[in-house]
Image (tube, helix red, strand yellow):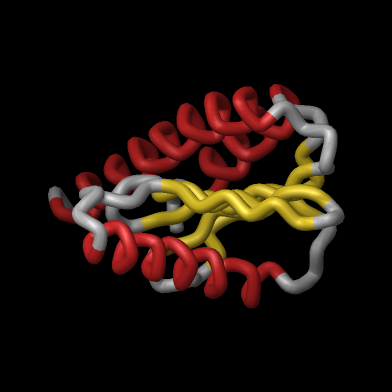
Length: 130
């Protein structure tokens, strides 16, 4: 995908802003990895799980009448796993240490997911115009 270098750059910017992040990946809504900045070798599996988690969150949000679900945060003993919708066609998945400032995590991740969505929309626009 033509936007992959820009998406990777955004993941690296995000990790620089939130030093407690231990990994970041962007994936299509289908679970296909678009870019990653992590040492975790199971990125394909994580990408699919992230897309599925956001899908399940959307079903739950619809069922309780809360509208569009855009985020999932999991707090485990070893830290955090967070998933954010990046527009209708992508997801952002982050892994963080237990000591991360969750407010800062959300703030920066929301900015990055919006930026990733813009980057991917630009690619789709270029494809439609060719």
